[in-house]
Length: 466
Image (cartoon, rainbow, N blue to C red; front, side, top):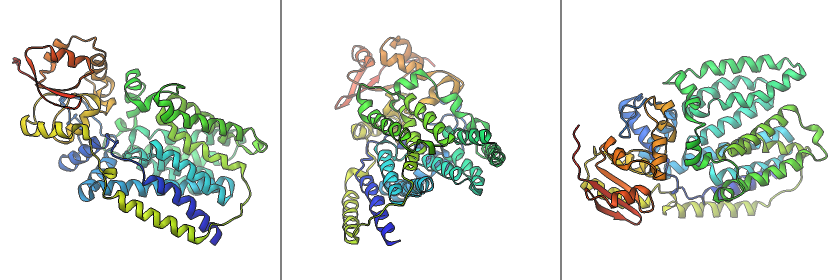
């Protein structure tokens, strides 16, 4: 037992060490979550878009519980509180990963190693302050419950309840993960199929327990699959062997696929069950379709590599080494706690927002770029667009396809005069390399009033009749 604890401590401490080195200042989407949580606590559940200038858009706050938690912790504890929350959830993810690998292989030492490796890969792009940390933990619990093949399957409805309120757009994935097990039970004619189907039905019914009912349950149908979203949003890009996205995401996936295939067709391939093969193939395909799904591949397919190692390992780690690691971890956290590492800042916009707060009314009609909207809205300004890409689709907002319009603004093949007159924009935040900048810069009725680095603020002096 002492040997297992010492080795386990080492492998669990390594991912946590790397977690403390992650820079969270690059995470911009946190601002709309803060805005959601703040609005909900003050006004209740919204059904009309409340942050942008599109005040008549139908709206579903599909991440409402995550938003409330993030904002409440940020309000009470600041940036450090958010990092502690993400760290605690990450410990939960790491622990369930270990339990899953241990259940599959029975090998304590290799399970520690494999769980830590998966967690390290998740930390590169997915263990960040977004609702996905909760959904990743929920999906791991789903797979673990299914792997136990006992009464744990009765926890599926509880997980469904958490998923639909934490991250409704990912709720349907619970049922997709169950399908390989259903297929195996059907082929083998096992009675377990009845328990699983019963709990899947109950999980579906539990999905109605949310503030938006069926709209939250079907949110993904109206919100994804758009070619424009796939083009604009980086995490929706598909697998590619060229470009920056390959270095960021795809190189990891490609390496894992090669290793996984090698393991799967190794000597012990006869031990692979139907549901393992289905999970591996299905999640591999999803990971190739877009980068965001790589987290699902990591937690739903890679743990089954532990099937190769089916006997207990040996060895131990000296206690003194563990004490040294603990000392280093405490030192790193203490240092990072007083640096900008844990500060949620959008440095490029700070001076811009300071200027706007002193010189521009909060109810002004403002044009902004995609990535800047969240931060502006958190500070009370109503922008044209923000990183919640799906709410700007007509199928979701039931009014107008703003995302398609914005795509043409980026390409510069839109009539800028009609575009500006349509919304009666009073102020613009644009980048020097954007097509709209060149139009604004050459218009005598529109004047530059402030700039910081490559961001220019323009004021529109034209008078529109309402």
